Length: 350
Image (tube, rainbow, N blue to C red; front, side):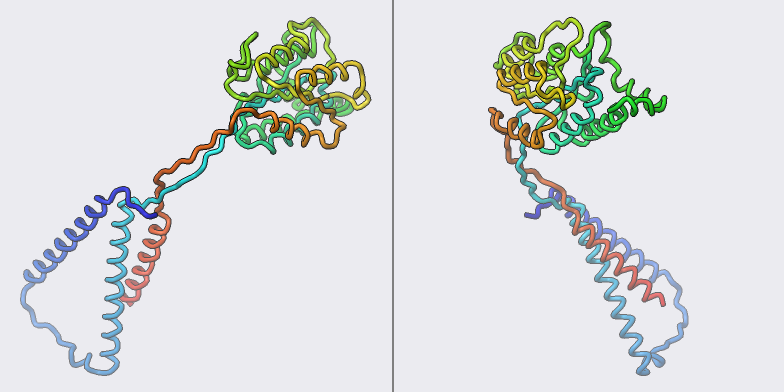
């Protein structure tokens, strides 16, 4: 439905146009009266010919057309000044859920992290409205990007990580790296190895990832959690060093806080059934998470379905209506009318 937000502006514009027209007419009349009487050459006899009469009629038609176009353009401009608007009604959809991508970047997992990043990129392509974040860890953790619903930025960050990690999949790849490429990888990993004689502290890394979620407190309960929360933990579960939290203790903390942790094995396929892998599977599934191997062909789809099924909070939906400026057709009409007037004016000058 069309509506003018400033109807009073239309009246002002019309009054201003009328006033300007009256002033111009008065000035023209005054100028005509002030001209001295002079003998003029009368060409009426010339116009009585058929050709002259035809040209005069044509000139008058073009003149009337120019006047009509000018008036229509002024009317349209006056209407545009009143800010034509329409009611814009839309349904807002907001998933009440946060997902943290938690990536182990220790030496044993780094050659396989590019595959994990590819899985993460596929994951976020299925999300709509969720907030996502990425944290990487070794002996310490670093937030790559915090929780956000800016999927363009998240995809750009993951693409950058994907490009970097392609160069560390094998020792041959590492040997072929230039000094600049090596520095870029080092910069991306900066902040993840701040403790000496320790790598892949998985429990500590998981707790750091959980700390990115609003409402999480050490020893907090599910009642403290404001939104549904999930963590996708990618690691090979190979620990080297003394942890503050073991994986089991970290999972107890997240479970108590109402955070579900899904496990994604990041290691060679030969280790799919090793003791460390089976221990990780058992712990993840005991805490109601989904455990997946990189070798599973349908792993990503399974993980997405698992995350969707466990959403317990209602999706926030709201219908909103607001006035939205709709100058499109009016602007086009003014452009067409002015273009027509210019063409007619050019024709009259010939």
